[in-house]
Image (cartoon, rainbow, N blue to C red):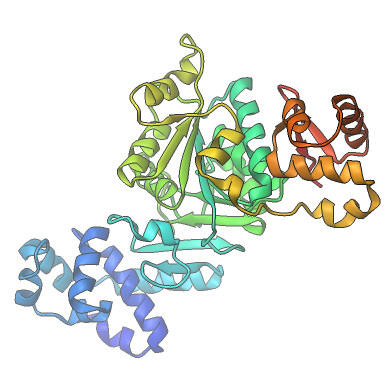
Length: 381
């Protein structure tokens, strides 16, 4: 590193520190776990490159090969090129242990030391869910995603997925439809979007969430990158929901990683003969995932029903225009959605016939949406 240190120390301190953090991620034989070990000993990255060979070799988990890789590192131009790229494109560089880094992911031992983020919302949210699944969803899978996001909308979770075809794409689109922030975790650098067809979706997501990756510019969407991508999807969430999966694939990898991180995993079951549900059925049957059938299952599993849900903006504008019975019904639906008529009958003071009439009236006013199974939710704006 001696060859590149003079160029680095001439830069402002914050920029110099960032360059050294980036440099650590580029050293051959040094992964995220080893970076964590090194920074426990040296506290700041520049000191790692100043350290002598014997000092590096003496650190458990480093040894002579990695010590040599650190001492011989000289990719100054690549480090500076990456810094120029992120600055030119207004990309945030999030360093593990520093402000802005996803707090839940930070506690995973193999979490990326550096993340690149292009977005508009902070990654620290009270509730975060990751949704994964097949790239070829059936109508059943599509309906599950739509119902799930609709049910969760009032609780304002951050919705995370991988920007892939299928369930990932549906999760991102449904989140934005319900005015929820959504993050796409990429298996490549931010200088491209894969799949190509999702370029427009990705641009919209930057305005309603963001794009996140550990990979530098020029990194292609190669097969080996996606399991690494999946650990971010699993690690930054409170729970991972699997919506349709075959017997192999990235969704099952993400579920396994989530279990290793002690994250909650839930999956939708399917018929025994449905190939697209075989992976989910196996997760449930092997106790690697909890069974769920609707969004309310997740709300109850996560104990969110006791939390203060997000007040729908339509209530602020329109509740004053409703009569007392209409306000009662729409507030009960907002608290318990998706909500069945039987539940409304049990928790309200109104007669069943009155409730039916009010629901029809609220639906005609565009304030209530009817979901499959005669469930009701507050309509998005």
